[in-house]
Amino acid sequence: MEQVVTFILLLPLIVWSIFQQPLYNNAVMIEESLQLAIYEGQKEASLKGRYDEEIYKEMRDYLVETHNYRPELIEINGTETLTPRGEKLAIKITVPKPLMTVIDLFKIDTSEPFTVQKTILSEYKD
Image 1 (cartoon, rainbow, N blue to C red):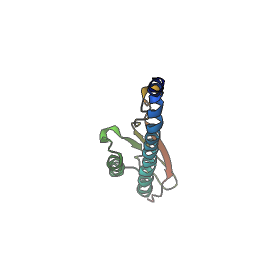
Image 2: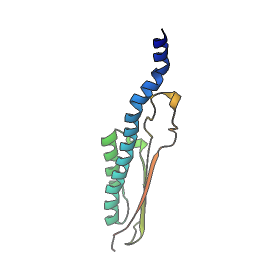
Image 3: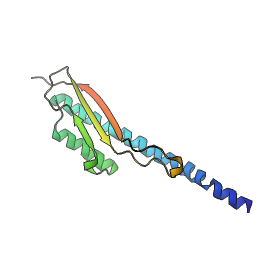
Image 4: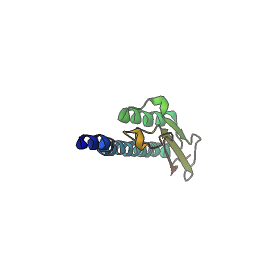
C-alpha cells in the first residue's frame, strides 16, 4: 500500500520530468524560427531600403508553415519608410508563447508573447 501511495504522490513530478524538456525544446525551436524569419526578411529589406507587405508575407508564411500559427496572431512591425544607405532598419515580430508546462502546479507565466527585435543597416542606393 505504501508503494501505491508513494507512486501517486510522485506521479505529478514524474509526468513533469518526462514532458517538460520536450516543451522547452519546442519553445527554443520557435524562438530560433523567429530569428531565422527575421534574418531572411532583413536581407531583403536591406536591399530594398524598407520593409513592405511582400517581405511581411514571406516571414508570416514561413512561421505559419513551420509552426502552424494562425496568421492573424503574428504581429510584424518594421521600418516602412524608404531608408538611405547606412541608416537603420528595425523589425519586430511578436507571436504567442507556446505551451510551457505540463501541469499547472509548475506554472510558467505565458501571458507575455515571444517578441524578437532586430536592426540592420540599409544598403539601398537612390
